[in-house]
Image 1 (cartoon, rainbow, N blue to C red):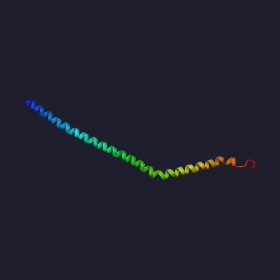
Image 2: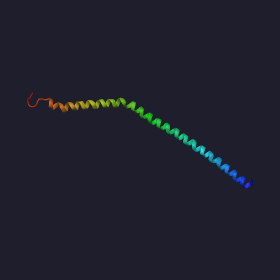
Image 3: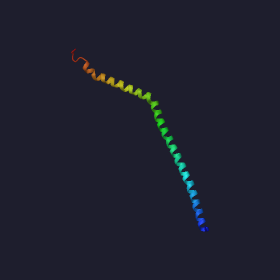
Image 4: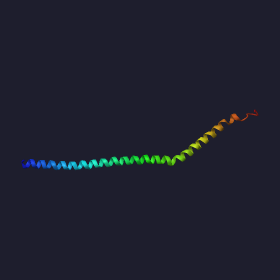
Length: 89
C-alpha cells in the first residue's frame, strides 16, 4: 500500500471514529430527552389527579349549594299557584 492511500485510509478511520463518538452523544441525548418527557407527563398527570382529589370536597360543596339554590328557586316559582288569590280558597 502506498503512503498516500495509507494516509487517506487513516484519515477516513479517524473521521469514522469522530462520527461514531458524535452519534453516541446524540443517541444519549435522545434517550435522556425521552426519559425526561416521560417524567414530565407523569408529573402533569399526577398533579392533575392530586388537584382533583384536593378540590373534590369543594366541588361537592358547590354542587350541594347549587342544588339547594335550584330547589329554593323552584319553591318560589311555584309559590303564586299555592297562594289563595283575592280571598279565594
